[in-house]
Length: 244
Image (cartoon, rainbow, N blue to C red):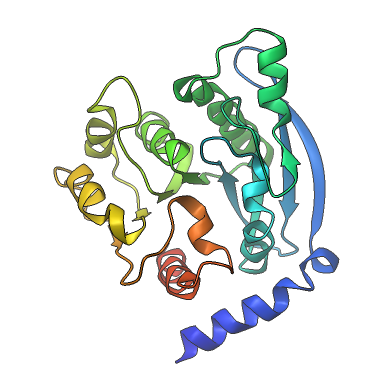
């Protein structure tokens, strides 16, 4: 009962988030020099944890307009980035993708890895602590790969609807074998079988796989209030975060 009450408080408090937490626009240099457009949502707490928020295909940092302030209220400072593979969502245009196209840079899913890594390095150096990576669809797979490679910089992974979205069709399964930190994985109900198959060979005992009983949603929009099952996703995610 307490967890449901706590979640309700988060939802009610969301409407006051703008006055409680600071938001600012940032630009970070990607590994190839491309400017990454981002928004920093700073939590007003002495013991803040750090999250990097990465969007799904055809989206932007606007994917987290609703959810980043809620993470703030749980004590997490969040950086939501525009990756070069994307477009727009929630009236937020992906400026990184626009700039990449103007400069003739490739914008495939794999090309966005350098943007996520650059943002990870920025946060790690800026705050002096390991970062929680949050990904949605293709970026949820990229962060699993990055977590396997950047073991000293990543505290945990939250992966919404991961899959083998790349030319190397076993890349994520191999990456999962290398990850020893806590991982939260979830998906829509229709994706459960595919996701279960993705993680089947991982020996990481710290993987939490939340399987929704209702339809749910693909990607991190499963947390949006217009998803009828969002409460269940939030409850499972908050339990995971408490365990860190």
